[in-house]
Image (cartoon, rainbow, N blue to C red; front, side):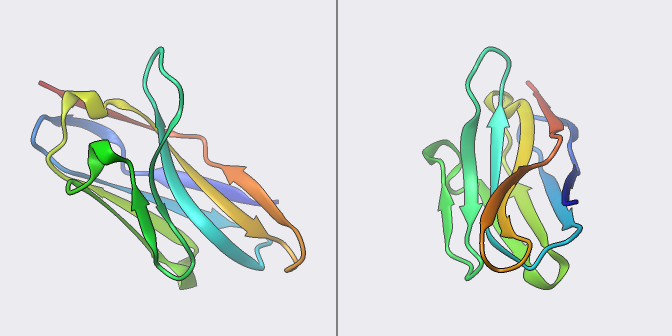
Length: 120
């Protein structure tokens, strides 16, 4: 059984920083993409940042220049460094990974989410 566990969320003032972590554990052969999504109250879940196994990254326009996604493949861990946080960044942040148990088929997995609240 595979689990994705996020940590690092919390309450921060506008302009502050937080670093989210997500560790994937269980029967994992390899992980393809690892992503961060967020969902604010009353809004759809949106992609924040993505990183491939080779390190290529992609960001939502709203976070470019402020957020940085990185990963440690040896630890099956993805990070999201969030700087210059704004109240609009307030949301539940979810880790997502596309991975394979045996090298044949890939499956999508989600973490349980971690709350990020930015006060003005």
